[in-house]
Amino acid sequence: MFICNIKMNGNTMKIIVVVLVVLILIGVFAIVGYRFYDATSKVMVNDEIPSSQNSQIEVNSNNYTNVLKDSHENIDKYVGKSIKFVGFVYRLYDFNENQFVLARQMIISSDNQAVVVGFLCDGSASSVNAVNFENDTWVEVEGVIVKGNYHGDRPIIKVNSMKETDVPCDEFVYPPSDSYVSTEI
Picture 1: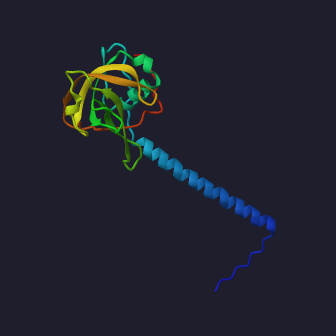
Picture 2: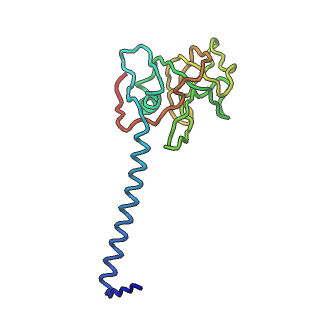
Picture 3: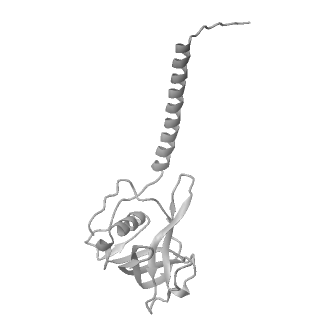
């Protein structure tokens, strides 16, 4: 049998407790840092924002959330611009029959949890007939951005054409990148 006797005074105990607390905090920060790095390393986003050389803003899975964010932060910059993109029809209880969100699922965590994000659309033009498109129907929309009000100022797409389309292979989008810089369109 092995017996070890250690004699410690109060100062030695305080030092040991402080060292243990510091080591635990370092471990916690290391785990949190690794999880954050691991989650952000899986998100690949193209920071491209459409430029003024394009007569129509082409929104795709790579630039979807950057354009969405920029258009909400700088509505006046986008008013009057043509836009074309694909998403699914998503309606809320307080929309009229011709209003919908052209939506995408945005991945928000490394375990693939998602939220619905999108552009508010007004399909009241006689040629569009948005009423005929059920929720969760994938459509391609072309329209013009106007400034509207839905619980505050919002960019709203006045839909000129709307047609059903297949689910895109890259149906999910990712949050706007931290390196995203707004550009003039």
